[in-house]
Amino acid sequence: MSTLVVVGAQWGDEGKGKVVDALASRADLVARYAGGNNAGHTLVLGDRKIVTHLIPSGCAYPGTLCVLGAGMVIDPEVFHAEVAALQRGGMLQQGELRVSLDAHVIFSFHRRLDGLREDLGRGSAKIGTTRRGIGPAYEAKAGRRGIRVRDLFQPARVSALLELNRDRLDPELISLGGPSAGVDVAAEAARAAGWAQSLRPLACDVGALVDDAIRSGQRVLIEGAQGALLDLDHGTYPYVTSSTTLAGGACAGLGIGPMAIKKVWGITKAYATRVGAGPFPSRVDGELGDLLRREGGEFGATTGRPRDCGWLDLPALRYAARTNGLSGLCVTKLDVLAAMPEAWICAAYEGGVAPGADELDQARPVLERLRDWGDPRLVERVKLARRLVDLPPPVRDYLDRIVEFTGVPLALVSVGASREQTIFLEEAF
Ligand code: GDP
Ligand code: IMO
Ligand code: MG
Image (cartoon, rainbow, N blue to C red; front, side):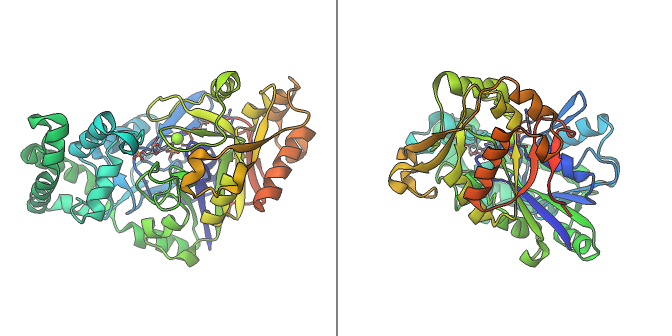
């Protein structure tokens, strides 16, 4: 059995796209299981930069099957635009894409509600979401009034479900956005009929497909979205996304059993970022934070928003290691940290607050300064390293510290955005 799950071990944007692309040449099938186009996963192929939102980041390899699981929420407009753009770029040929019949569909009223709540909500209602309609679509799913891909093929059912959603949502939509903000059942049903046509050839029982692939010995790479601290159950609630981002969600989100998973790798940047509201104890304000943002290009791949930046939070990473059951760690953006004149690590929180606790927003980090950092030659040596021994000693010491603290061995180190700038330390499959 050769199934590897790769998840974000922080607040998202850890470099999942880069790592999945670097591993996908060896995979037969790459699957997404959660989230939707709140994700923005960047692949750098030579001088081309591709950002995937819904399509798995294995799409750059001919012959690799890309599948979207039942746990996802899919905005068909975004889906079609993304597929068309990838195909124009010579990727994702006929037969290389499948979508779960059970994935839920994002409609325009989900997006509108998400945006209106962000604009007009108060206090903890402002999450700083991506405004893509993710929360409202998962709400509908949990409320058993969601519209699935399979429902699109039954127009009468779609209309009935749209009416149900209109009755539930119109009071809120109209109170926040005025009379024209309500659900337009006829217009939505017409759009849904168009999506049904284009999705029909791609829709299938993805659980059975992935299960067959695993049983027949294919190499299956499962790509998480968002990150551990954004998980609905175990993240910094309520400042989280609305799905299970953790590796455990891969099973439910695809329709396979836990025994099918062989390895779980968690990705962490060499520092930390967060976008949207919520606790971030190791955030750095001022010049150093700005420098991290500039050096790391820390602007959202989906929304373009500047990401808050800070030092690597070891307690939060250890928490992510536990909640995901990580068997390997992938450390990315080591080149960015190496460019900093000084670097720190968050080794604990004052008062011993637990990463999953509400008090995290009050937690003060205990920071330790990294030794022998700030040599201007460090960054070039890091970018050129292709083996662990090529890395300068202070950088290797830093990696050792992370491994020692989390108890998770290194599986991969990334020293730049391109595929080639990758140090493989463990076989993926
Ligand atoms: P994802 O959501 O986890 O896939 O991450 P994003 O794509 O949103 O953000 C990660 C950003 O860092 C992208 O711009 C990547 O091209 C870039 N990146 C990934 N790994 C590295 C690395 O090791 N070094 C540098 N400099 N950039 C990286
Ligand atoms: P990738 O897969 C970083 C954050 C949003 C917000 C919260 C809820 O690229 O790592 P949502 O729109 O999901 O309801 O927003 O979650 N968020 C992400 N942050 N990377 C992501 O995806 C994210 N997806 C959602 O900023 O704080
Ligand atoms: Mg991202």
